[in-house]
Length: 353
Image (cartoon, rainbow, N blue to C red):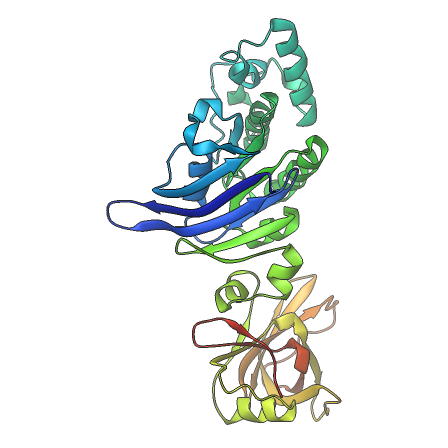
């Protein structure tokens, strides 16, 4: 049995349904991420687990206990918020110790546990400082330490890095993952940032419009998306328009999938060859001309106009050679296995032919 289970979770407000029968399971020590755009229901689900908003129907079970029957303050759940939620008039030590007072933890144990929590988030030297004199990243570490110091059964994190700059987000997300592994606590993490989710999660639950699109490892979510929504939301995607060019490409690859309404391919799964280059076994050659070249340092994006539509080819490690020029004749090489087909409802189809 899973450590945390939400079964058929429904949350209805007066004017709309925020969750439409959502079911997830989280194992002990797992880092489980809820990923999706604003309004998809991920924060609603997190708040239901925390007890801030009860479900309209469905069950939530933690380690065999029915959470819906337990008041929020008795659930032993740690929560880290987007806006830090630190007390500006209290020292770092007192901020972290705040959650231990209502639990009547002895003073000696408070000192020990707070010291351990501060050490885990690298704030031991700042224990007596006031939060106002600290950076956003340091304030978020205070929130993380305060959530962990109560020794929660479950850690919930609601977009904790969204108020930080890009470089600090990357640094802190790695620290959060390292701390979570070290303390081995089941964690549910909410984000709309696909790269963040891929970098730190054991498993990802992609949500849209109150429903679950797919649950899987980062590799499964990115490399084997089961819906068109997941393929578009996680990573970038070329969608090939219907027409003679697409039909010729599919024919050249020996593909026949009459029920497919959408054909797509990731930019990094395409290769750029010289003009006139031929394909090979399982590889089709699309002649085209460069429309735009964008150099991004560790990679370059090349827009190419082909008979099968405008496609973007991602080139890894482009180096410092001169940019490809607009109008230059090239060949786009398309591997059969790189193509992904989806039906009219956006469900993934197997390749046939």
